[in-house]
Amino acid sequence: MALDKETVAKVAHLARIKVPEDRLDSLAGELDGIVNWVEQLGEVDVEGVAPMTSAVETSLRWREDKVDDGGYPEKVTANAPDAQMNFYTTPKVVE
Image (cartoon, rainbow, N blue to C red):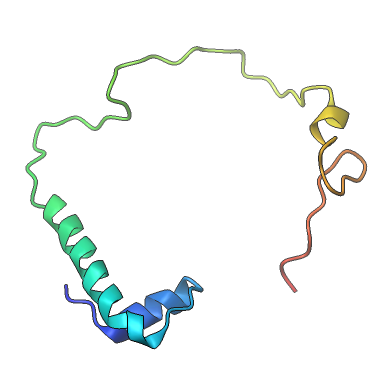
């Protein structure tokens, strides 16, 4: 899969990254190398290899499954820049 300047420009636009026009060619080469390397991973024979989540086999500790708010919301929101009624407040991002 060869990446060209237009594809890199589109990806940069979708990622909301401003890329100067003179950098598009070099980025296309770099990204093309990365994509080719990832495609090579598809050629690895993994027949009979079990999926793993860790390099060391471990077991998780079990605990009672109950809802618990911690009981100290004042401490949790103490460092919040603008906490109201023990809740974090954030600026509106959708209009």
